[in-house]
Length: 541
Ligand code: VG1
Ligand code: CO
Image (cartoon, rainbow, N blue to C red; front, side, top):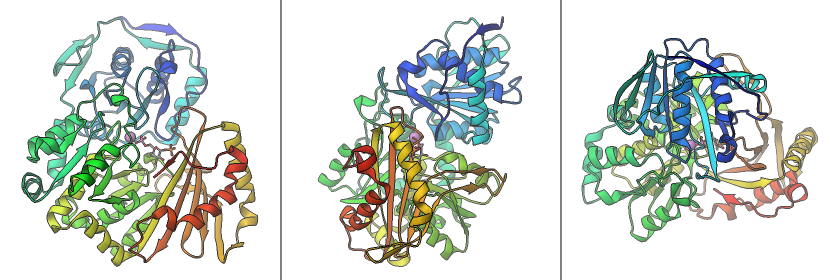
């Protein structure tokens, strides 16, 4: 097989964000754009010779073309085994599972996650390392540097691989294995959970459940796990056929974008509803007329973990991203285990899990998972809930309310301002950061700002330090404001304002109204209107 060396010139801006490189499809379709990035990833590895690489994506527009390009480049770079999901499908957690199970040196996951798909929408690519988790910041920095100076990439001439048939094909010295993308992952889930009691619950007549796959990657996974293995009725899963454009919707599991699910659960009086995102790593949990905030979900799962077979000996520790509410911290305290606070992005949890420091971790952005893989895992979280509901016989709302009465409650909301001017956003963050020292100690309407800083994280395992991970403002009444700019958007800047407030009041149903004083204070301290001209957020979660 003749390796071809293709001359290329760099593109600026190939800098991976919170989770991989995300750009409009049209940007990825420029000559050599994808190739430059993939070659930079391969160049960042010690060696590709003789190694295995996992390749798959969320099925969005451009997924198949990208996979064919990557297969030829991987062979030219010396990989010996390529493990590819059938039809180009691999959810993010399944890719993590497969990388670990087959000892691959890493994997390329093609996804822009919850961002919309289609010719005019978004595409993305991320590299996961041998532990199955996202590349570290050091690695993504080195990949970015390589893209700035790249002059050549390697590929071969070969016919496209048939991605739709499971089986093996050799090209040159490489073996390409097209695998069923579901089986390894479904088997792992069956090892972790008590499928027996879960099957009784889901196939029985006393419990009704709906899962919205949002025409994204989880469709085939839920068909196998919920319908085939757990005996749930067929109508339990909706939008289960993956589509290149996700049916024209945002595959983002929140109350706004999963409105159809919320309507069905509430109108039909169902007991439990859940949804996942484009690449299957996020989850939203709802009960009948009851929304479970992701921060609470992490805390409730941690408190009840021992009801699940895989975690019956207890948790080693837990971690949450900084903007996630502190609900899980109090669970950790009660359990006598460590709780780590990391920057936003799953890559920061990997070292803690590899080092045996934590079992569960989560983010407010609908991400929860454990050390069974090194990614967030939407279906795992849904299965945790079903296992716990089956073990306790409780409803979703009773379980959460019991939790609040035992541990107290954290009201939480996130306000997103999308597509704002990048320069204004940068300027706003700069001014806010500069004002922190003088703000600390000030009192606003009887509430004192006790701590105001730019969050820095020192990784306790490898000692690396990540600066400027978001502004934190903590108040003496248990309130907190967190402000940062998104690292996953593809147009302008997105401002995220996170607000949380400790309370003992279990009866509050309108979080926005309850948080109003904190929201108004945040708007004033950040100067949102002054810098962006906006008066209302685009999305509230
Ligand atoms: C967002 C979330 C973050 C999450 C990331 C990737 O990042 O806030 O918590 O890890 O998306 O999730 P940002 O930088 O836009 O705030 V996924 O499911 O989109 O890969
Ligand atoms: Co995702």
